[in-house]
Image 1 (tube, rainbow, N blue to C red):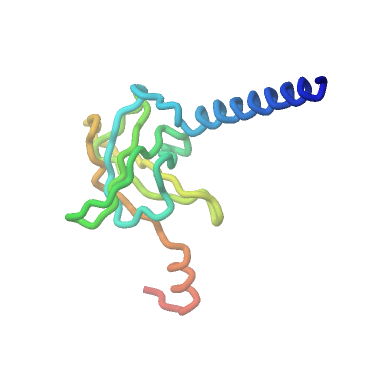
Image 2: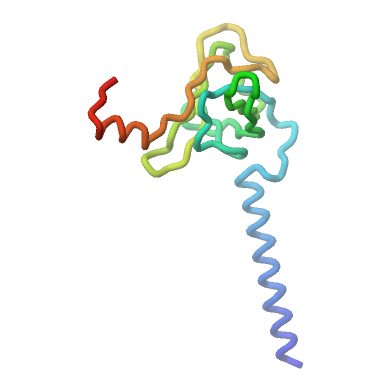
Length: 149
């Protein structure tokens, strides 16, 4: 009978640890919803390679949001990213967005470069000036082949 009690206690500890990991993961990845603490913006990229739903959106290296949706626009054949920006952060309407890399082997993120306009982007607004992902393999191929275009 003591074996069953021990197994039940160990099982309860395992379930409690799993619940703790889920709680931590939902807090770190914003999977808990977060809901009304941000507003949506849209940006259209020629190549959205390396980003997906949940990818960070950063300003000056600080996370200010994350990607909510990533879809292909059938008319323009461009990737449209919808991301949420934290309330209280107002971006000038001439801001730009670029897909940047954390390093040679690091992940990608969307970097926001603020503009100088006195007018700010409204919720649901679009960042027009964008730069898509740069293919590292393409750059290496150009370097090795010696084509300096």
